[in-house]
Length: 117
Length: 106
Image 1 (spheres, rainbow over the protein chains, first blue to last red):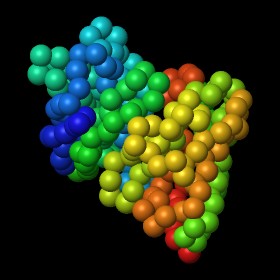
Image 2: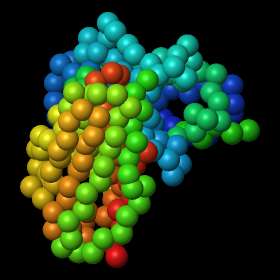
Image 3: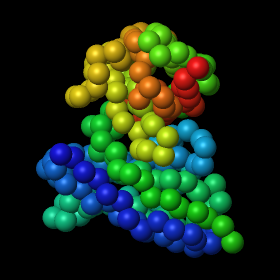
């Protein structure tokens, strides 16, 4: 059974940094691209970033380019998101998702990030 | 960027009814479309990909259709467990989601 478990969210002040992770199990992690998708409170879904299976290529939405870094450790089957220079508009639940490079076929339970002073 | 517009934003239907949700892309996405279901307080779950292919384990009362810029999700014989929000997503050019449709029971 595919399982994705995020950890590390929380409350952070504007301009500060936060890093969280997603532990994967139930599939060969190093065979798949992975992604982060976020959802602001009572809003829709928004793709944030994708990393291909071996970490050699990454993709970001424009609003987070230069501030967020997606990375992975295939030996630990773990995905990461480093968020710097956080803004109030980054407040959302962040979901880790397995990415076929087209659609997102499995999702984690999500981790809440609140950016507020 | 490709914009995805869903309609309606919300709808109310009775048990056993057939429900249809529409999704329009701002340009041709060549069937690069997926549908997700998100139950209250839960993470999204993939229902359909490639516009009309059912994901593993998804009940057959769900179906997808469409082409070009116009796509739809149909739920036959609505069940109580189908109360959720539904999102479309295009993957022809990067990845963007529709605004969602909230489905409630009448």
